[in-house]
Amino acid sequence: MEKVTVGPISMSRIVYGMWRLGDDADTSPAHVQAKVEACLAQGITTMDQADIYGGYTAEALLGGALRAAPQLRDQIEIVTKCDIVAPVGRHAGARVKHYDTSAAHINASVEASLRDMATDRIDLLLIHRPDPLMDHHETGAALDALVASGKVRAVGVSNFRPWHWNLLQSAMKTPLVANQIELSLMAHDAFTNGDMAHLQQLGATPMAWSPLAGGQLLTGGPKGLRDKLESIGRDHGSDASAVAVAWLLRHPALILPVMGTNSLPRISTLSDALKINMDRQMWFELYTLALGDEVA
View 1 (tube, helix red, strand yellow):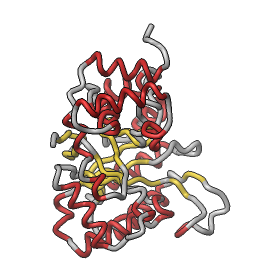
View 2 (view 1 turned 90 degrees about the horizontal axis):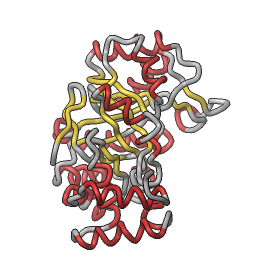
View 3 (view 1 turned 180 degrees about the vertical axis):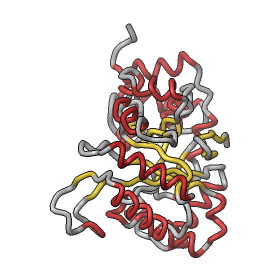
View 4 (view 1 turned 30 degrees about the vertical axis):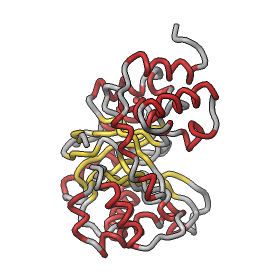
């Protein structure tokens, strides 16, 4: 599988999202290990986490697998996120869900992530959501210090608009290297609202969460779009989901779709998107159906 250079890290073109690990009937270390190995078998080496996933339990589920099979750690890249504080799990005492980009919170989150995931480093740390109370000087200095310490190899953001990115970057020595945003055929505003243009101008990496629109592309959404995805999938010996992901992969910005599923058979087919030969007109056929009208 193609690898993409993201700052100092080489990441797989498709990323395995672990936000649903805790929803599986089997959360044993052996079963989580099987998921990681199913990814590795097709060249998917990048695992996407966040401290809040599974009510602050998903990182520890990955950690259980890495403790049982420590040889896996050097075969994968770990992405994780912090700054969302929800009144569950370790933050059950919080009065209200909120964001915290203070240095103290970021540092505590990183220490918890390192411990839970049984690792000595986080390959890519993302600030999960823009914080209206962010002191960009404090947040930026905390991220710089984490990179300098070696606990974090690279830093980025998630769900940031260009002005949020620019504000934080203005107070940092370390370059931000990625922004994980919602992006799919049903959430395509980033292509026209400046988000993607901003990342392309900077040479930063877009990561796409919910690339299947939470499954709506397969079970709902515009029928014409769904039918076209299925038709192209059949023509390529694949399915609609592979085509929807291939639509993102076709973009020159080298978007990294983050794919989340607990099904081992489904995990084993995530790389099928790379087999779809999507030319420019096919891309626009799908885009037109997603828009509901031809482009101007």
